[in-house]
Length: 68
Image (cartoon, rainbow, N blue to C red; front, side):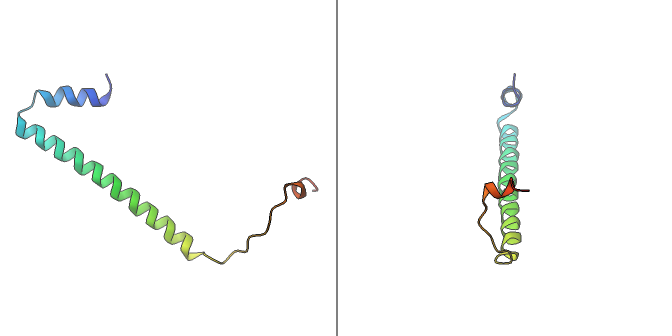
């Protein structure tokens, strides 16, 4: 039995208002996870933007790597 099935079996035995609390808690956790992902993405993009244009990209020739 996986975790979702175990949660379902447990919540089935709870009164309706308590089951709604469990659902509300799970939805808050899900929303927090999405917010955390967005925050991490914004932080990563801000770091990239800080260094934008500082490095000059040169064409890479694979054959030149073997000449060492």
